[in-house]
Image (cartoon, rainbow, N blue to C red; front, side, top):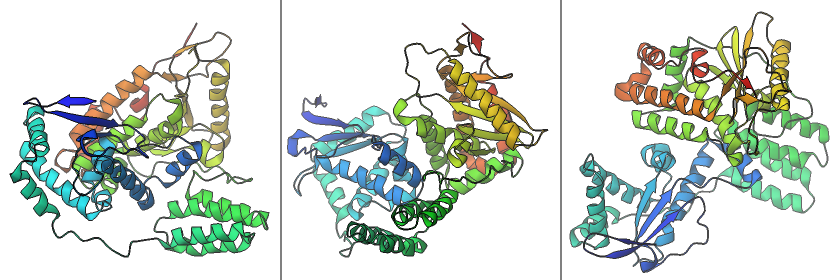
Length: 450
């Protein structure tokens, strides 16, 4: 499309959303490039791998690589120029968090640094100031060109490159497996696991060890898979799953929340962006159901509860479980992918909730209570179904209410290192009704029959 700036100039503007492989936009084909969010995988295998590697250095490097590839769509040679606007919390996080920012190429890091200097000067000046800064760049103002050139002058790239030992081992293992040497292939990957910095990421690669082992040693493959599953819940379930471990709170809620937030975020900006990303994943999208499940687990941890995904860990039980007290668990079943014409809750969905109650009674103490919570687009159920006693429904309106309360808590706790003070965290959790069972139940409704 064409955008007109002040003064009458026309520029090519391109918005890239989710996919930009193979896009070539040289010269005037694109002078202003808007990248709205990091592309998310659409293929099921890619989505599973993304979940398995989320939070790791490998995942961060892949995200940054995708962003940098997108930024290069409008700059096709040394004489070309293009302004790039990055939108969304996920992109902002890569600019603010040093773990991500250091993964950009040296020249891009220099340009990000210059942009951040400009952003400080434009802070609180509104959209007109941003528009004028863009116009200055697009007019090729001599003063701007001088500052920009100085920012990237002397930039040097590492001529050797960096390939991790696990990447080398996986490639060698693939070649061995193609030659029919699956035992050697499994040993090749297994031997490099010690070089992987994260046990979570190593668990993902151990599944690959199991795949190669299976051809010659099925029992050994199952043992490797069980070990992999203990480290990473996104790997395949072994034939025999581990027994259910009762989930218990490790500390008082506010203290646990403070510790988790302090361990996860270095600055208030990162905390705000991280919560924004998490809340964005709590969406009713059939293609992103795993993201929604992971977001609910993460929200529980952010609020200071013990939180896990039993269905992923054990292959049975609810999608999410929050232990809000040692003797009270919230059993959360997500139906965020429902798209049928009649959105009313079906009998099978209510039966599933009843099954989770039976699972809880079988695996938790007799004195422990549970509350079934169904995340569903509709609170009305078909008459042939019977909700378990105490059932609550979290509808899209309820999720919006929950997000509003969590955002208000985030905005307040991210100021002045508030998240590092358990007393301040307790005050804000209480103020925004995010303590105990009230955290979810306040936004939920009781089911009604049609």
